[in-house]
Length: 463
Image (cartoon, rainbow, N blue to C red; front, top):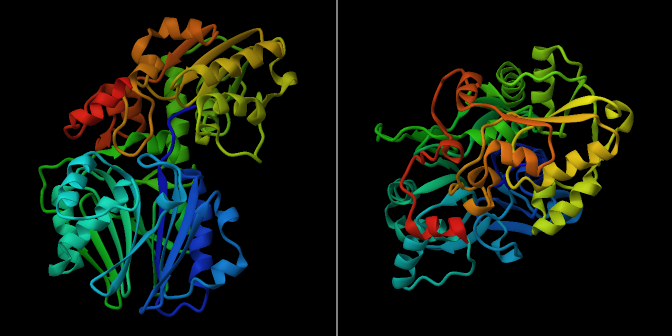
């Protein structure tokens, strides 16, 4: 079970839509609920004023018919949050809505700035007072700082000085804007239906509102949607290489989403086939840790010829275990979340496929459950390489001393998790599954960060 997720963003510009724009955003956020379960928010504008509502909890808990009815307008943005910077409090929920130069602005952010401390100090020295402890408020205040020349030029300036990962949807009173950082860490796509434009973290959110996929927002691109249609300000710095997060394909994206032309489910299926080629083992049954391990397990089964079956049943009425705020609660939630289908594993040599190992505690619990249910052998196959390094770009990873693969050998981990054998997908296998297209950040595996990471963030590696 992998890293904690980041956030999901959604924006819509519907100049002639007769439907309630808040309902469309609501459905879009439903499609992105897997990206954040701590809080949700929607902001809309009728061209004169911004109305917003946000709260702690799931989309269905935060919104109802009454508060959605109050969110009227032709432009709107939404956000689902998992905190990577800033505490899990209502004051940190997004979108952030501010008034500046007699006009309103709302902003929702997916990602994490690595130079937040430096930028925050600069703004505080200029007299800025912060209401939250999230890096998103730093972005809002930077926009205000450079807004005299216009919002588009302010965004260009912000792209020059902000470092890290950020996909933004921004709503002014007459336009919708999408922005992606220079490396393109976090996904953001464009869709359209009729004269309605949509921006979303994943294509699955376009599907749910009936929008056709147009294209991805490019790294370093600013997309402006208003009554003139869509205009683009593209990044002119060609020396900065694209570095999309590989974990979007491995785990974060919904299986039906497409990122950079690759369907997430197809990628996971391929990694399972490659994993079988790299680390075959004699067994009677292939099972998966649901739901993220299922496509890779099926791929492993197809390649190996060993039948796939359901070995673990997931309780779908609780959230993801890694959303829980403490390790103790995460471990307790595993027992609530998963149960063994005893008939399918009893007396069998089982290959259990999962997408990653972070701390190792969750997978050990699952293996112990399988053995208690009568599994004869439990072989573990992981459809990603060992996680050796923390992420600084919007994924809330443990510090390095809590990453089991950074501190123990594969054989030591195998013994710790009580498995009969353990193997990971190679980095070459990842490259093969992505068709060797490149353009991905794999720093969690190989330590090659796309940009310099400040010392104050590195110091957190051993907190």
